[in-house]
Length: 239
Image (cartoon, rainbow, N blue to C red; front, side, top):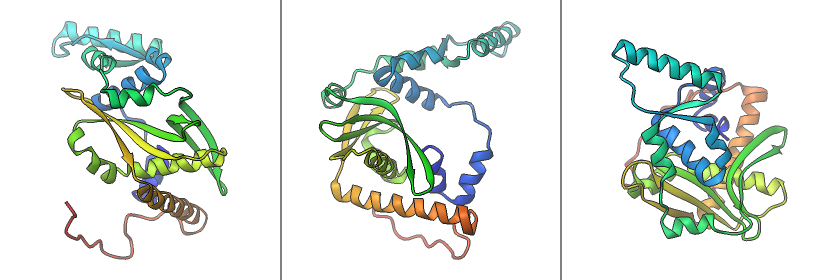
């Protein structure tokens, strides 16, 4: 899904991102990755190398930074400021959030290889419980109070719909769609958002349309820009 979500912006954006070199992860992304690993796959924590602050303005600081970079490269690790690393590891989830993780039969951090027509797809699903049918994605955010708006603006509902299709291809039925959201800044609050069935019915229909649109542009029309044939009209937002 990490590649396909670029197509949801535009075909040209998807094509450009395929050729783009991987960028250095931001502090927010590092926090999210470490938190994911801490609750879903602790073996992944070995990929990270925490470090204390280094003053790269001084000669000694520059030498120390170069030494850290070389050590990380030699050991195939990602450097992460110790403050971020420890903050992500020490999150205390609220009871409602912890209850998601405490469910027996949870399958965590599982990659699913599946096909939509002749489109080869891959989904890495955070949490799915085959007994209850509950699908949960884990997200970190700077603003938990307004995260419901982020679900819409970042189209997280389409990500859940994509995962739903992946599980359906494997013979599973999803009964509930949830997002466990955690703040990546103090006070590091957390809660769970459940997406309504009618919301997800819309999302699943839309993701299927987008997958078919992807196949058409890939095979016949070529990847298109955001809006090549008409202007974009901006209406008064609901909020």
